[in-house]
Length: 133
Image (cartoon, rainbow, N blue to C red):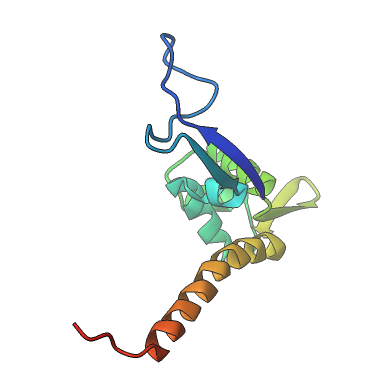
């Protein structure tokens, strides 16, 4: 995971800028870039990933169950692979794709931080004496 600064500034006359607009109220926001979450943000790509949860599959098998072409499935798998969520195994002329447990573990670790913090906050709140109103 890399932390990158996102600077808030508006697009120029060409309609694009070097850095995305976050908000005028957030002039300098540090964002943790996590390619796995970015990859799963696309609903079709997430569907492809979820299909692999049942076990390794080849592109043709995946394409039967999603409403996109085989080349599109291949592109989605490429993004998932680059994000570390999917691994590929060559079997002769076929490529079989499966979920990469280490990539999923990294995403889980990311969310576990928030869960742990939330549980700690709950424990503190549950143990705190009630305030008189």
